[in-house]
Image 1: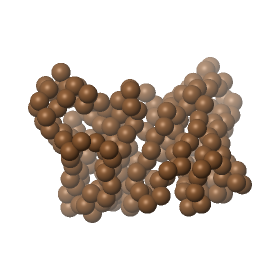
Image 2 (image 1 turned 90 degrees about the vertical axis):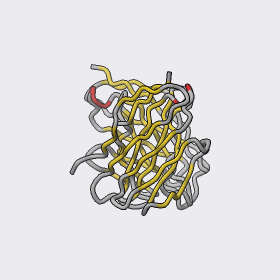
Image 3 (image 1 turned 180 degrees about the horizontal axis):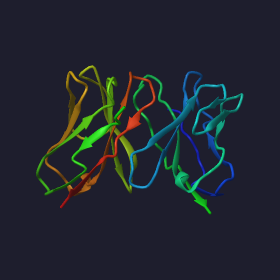
Image 4 (image 1 turned 45 degrees about the vertical axis):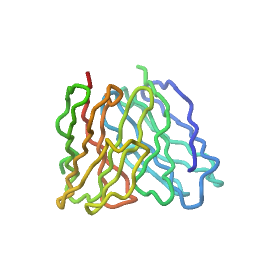
Length: 111
Length: 112
């Protein structure tokens, strides 16, 4: 299974873009990169996912490097409500439903 | 569209008892997965059901079991509860296997 590496924590000023890095150097060609976040005491929330092209939705943008060994989740205008633990997950091949969560990145958005 | 619902939200049980947790997926979703979250181990996959069949299982003892009904609702059962089973149990649903999962608020189980 491809593993991911994320910084344990990062701070971001309200209104600024938050760029969350993730390394997944052992990712296989047909494995997707997923991002979830978990606000304290709530269930994880799906944010975005991608295979190799950059993706954007109403919540965030996902930039995947050409070699697919790393990616960046971008929250364009961070708000206090974006304070959460962010998980970068590579979906396990042949185990479609299974998500392997690491420790994630604790993001704190400050006023 | 209503989200994933889990009942009960909070539960206190005594060691040795058993417990059943319930999950109602988003309407139209056919796949349901269960996860356990503890401060020490983080989020760990328990099992996944699709079309009333268990498709994947995590590395948990046989005391943990589950099932899925024809309407896609799912239950998980933990027998002979241990103190270490105290955790937040999360249910997630997806349209089909392989699609993004949407999580419920979880059931907070405390074993005393």
